[in-house]
Length: 303
Image 1: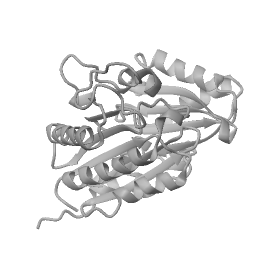
Image 2: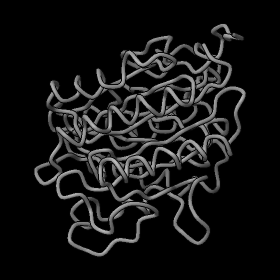
Image 3: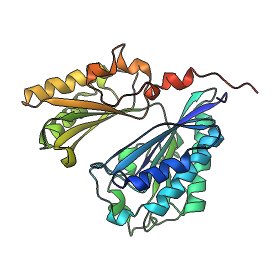
Image 4: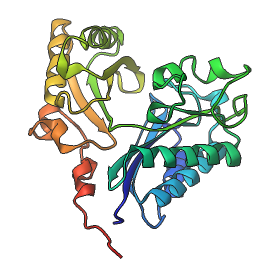
């Protein structure tokens, strides 16, 4: 493993056609110095998350290869899914892991953003720690209205064309702090309870320290006959997953709904589990390689 280590949890707008999903993963794999730490796809979200860890230049090259495969394979004009999205290469975040700081990650994000604009003709918006002064930093604001809302209007991207790519939309790229993506699935097809729970989390998070920085959405999972409280923990050190999971369980019980399972998307630090095993929060499909600690503990190549 190289001395400098960066993580990129890229989100692509395809979760149903597994041939396309595999094409994107394969385009990123095999790049010396970059490792596919995790990937997953979801048909209801119609979305995949590909998490790479490795040397910054190698990770950048792997992501650009994956992005080219995505743009060649995904047509946003026919894309449907429950998750908000702006383009085929929807979000490309870089998080420094070892021997690099946020300035380094920001420099990497800007190089990748410019390459996406130049080689794939994508309008690119920089977000989080890469956002320009006076511009929106948060993803929900940038992605408001989705692909449809951005189509046919004069955009003001940071780099790239001022109109969305006709089939691939636009991309959001940036350096950010660690984020944990965690979903809690309810044994209820009607998404109304999930939306109520998500709304309540958003309402009380300013008053409950363990919920600070938690973004929550209630979504329908029609393909599984369930609904979902989809969470992004933008301050994962603030509260452990068992606490957040218990809050959702209590709210669901109050509505007469059973929590069926949870899922971790991409990587998370071991500390986010609060010393508890993954099955404490009914986390299905969990692998030890989804712990950031696994990658940080690998030997450093000093050559």
